[in-house]
Length: 167
Image (cartoon, rainbow, N blue to C red):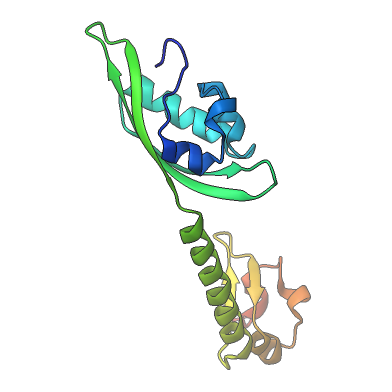
């Protein structure tokens, strides 16, 4: 209820947020207090923008539990308006996606380790540069071919690795 700020939560929402129904008044402010501090502004802005633009609200963010654990949730919401165009209420869902995020994060760590192993052992030279031609990363094959250490190459222009007639 936008005018009162009172939120009607399902039993599942209380379970996800790990809040005792008897000792909690589900207001918008109380909801915001459960959101991870680093995500709070993004959640507020996403919701306010959806109300202002009359669009669906969808965001994935973290909850900070009282014991310090992090939970991930995905929220969807739509706002209803009266005949004059004023927002009346918002109706939405929240889904606990913590287990999915944990698997996703573990997969990223494994994939990063695999890519790092390939990067470090491949015999081909790999040089990663930014849009200005500045070297950001090189592999050991590059060090071997050009005789510079990573520290000597990173931060320098790629032209340092090119023969004078090409550069």
